[in-house]
Each structure stands twice: as C-alpha cells, then as structure tokens.
Image (cartoon, rainbow, N blue to C red; front, top):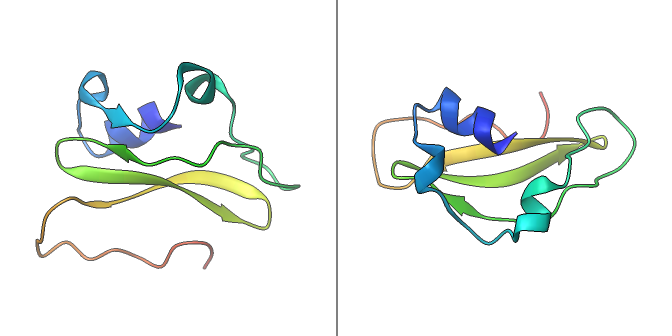
Length: 79
C-alpha cells in the first residue's frame, strides 16, 4: 500500500525514508474489516509524510504534505 500511496502522490518510492524494517515493509495491511494487522510506521517522501490509518478494522495509508502549502487534507478514519 505504501508503493501505491507514493504513486498516487507522484513520489519516488525508492527515495523513501521510513521507520519500518524490511519485515515490516513486507507485512500485509488488512484492507478488509476485522482488526488491524499492519505495523505502526511513519514514512517520508520528498513531498509527503505517510502514516497508517484504520477504521472498523480496514487499514490504509494516509498522507499529508511535508511542508506548509495550500493543499487541504480530508478527514482521516472514515466518512
């Protein structure tokens, strides 16, 4: 999911800095319902910071700009 998040933000995944170990990077997120399974993490691209989000057991990667800008962030964790 991190690779997808980087691609969506047009960032170079190979330049990522993260708190995840290699094992943590390879651990699957639970993209359905039923409990969090992914590792806690923070990851940094050149323009965005990435973090785990969970709602009703479904997990995904959230992101926010690294630097002040006019980009607005939506609510995280549900609609």
